[in-house]
Image (cartoon, rainbow, N blue to C red; front, side):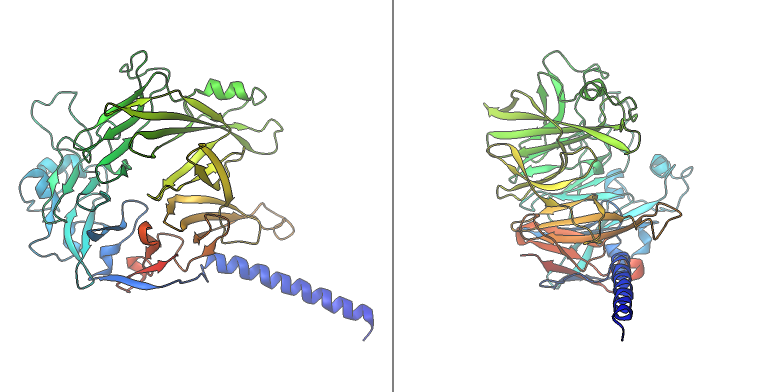
Length: 495
């Protein structure tokens, strides 16, 4: 065979092979083929797959030293799932009497008219794993409900979207936070917290993200006060940080004030980049993320990150991000937290900040201008960030952009777990008529703190039910309730 024909055949074979390989990467990413299954174990089983119905928020598994909990949510009322007499109707607990007919229209339902009007009816089902490995339903409530537990598992909170019952003679200063329930006996009895839980931090209860340090100390936060003092509540030298502290599991809480606002204004960002003439309208203070880390009994830090978007001056490269993070040290003196000198770091945005309870603090940070996060570790002594690696992608090794999906980032004792959403743009010679993009989700874990990642055999969309950080185990199920009749709840070991 002439050498020219041989080279031609080899070239064609290489092109075909490359094309097949490219299609395999794209197809396997979209269809979520592959992924490892390390140390697979069965956590338990549900009696009805609808018990583990997952949504974008407030559903899944929470593991505590005293029990394993499961929250599922369905459209419709509680009658969809059969329950025994000992299952607590939390709507009845709230109103002090049984609800005879939950199918009443808003006009006819009396106390429930405000609850049901203007939104689709849905029910959250709370189950607990028994000694026989079955998730037994213990309660249900007619709204979204996020389950939060103290680190020792002794106290369990349900943060719901239920409106508070109207109280005759209530003034405008009354608590307006949606309903929160608490159980101190592993779900046998529930109490409505009429005074709320950090009520001034967040009005919509399931938006709260309580941060525990030890069994009793807990923090919560909303948005810091700005420089404009629109609420009229701030006083000179006492500006709200939006952060609240409790030493008694939230039974009482104290607001944290600073001598100055922890926010910078849009004008501050514009002054840093006067060459940018077009700015995205994102309010007076841009995109805001707040976090708290408590290092020991006497030291803690408030982190407030802000991001402002503007059009690239070159007119061709899209938008640019102007980032700034404000760090406020907290020192406990005579039992009270006091804010020290505030420091600002230009060019830093903290998109996620998580610690593992053993001194390691990890984050997803952006130190560039395009909103692209990297995994980084915080040096708690120097308060500096060490980048560890990029976010993983289901399209690797093809070029792609990855973002954190739905705040799904966890830190274990010896592992990281992350859920990403990635986008790949095919070469223009494949899609010469348009600028195409392909997106897909994936679940990954790392055993070297973000330097490298391995993909897990877990659905990238609503596949993760929970994470047991102390044992480095991710909890999952085979599909959501409507596309899988497998009643099992499983885990993978990531150590």
